[in-house]
Length: 161
Image (cartoon, rainbow, N blue to C red; front, side, top):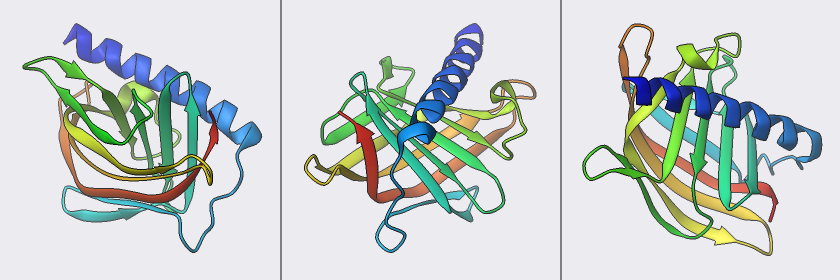
């Protein structure tokens, strides 16, 4: 439990730092080709705004829906492949946080407890990334859970190197 709370706090702090950096220097996604979506407990979730940053050897992808729901996925790597989050055997190759509103503190968001992200394509020249994701997440304050399935991000422009 203490590890989950620390992961939530770390993810939240990283999300804020990366988002602040990204907002100050991010080019807009091409609205025609860039997308990020998933199903949350079976309900379709789509982004209207996406910010993606490559910094310090990891990608941070943040998407916000028209309703203000926010999802941040931080991938601890910068190459195509599969990144896992699981307890046994321990693998913490990505973190994810879903918040129902920007006004919700990160500690009250849903932090991923297991799942995977697959980076299917990185174009370092055009600075675009594509892939898929799915994860289960829990809110530490009340132990409620969500399931994020059929997640995908396509042609997201990223800043950094």
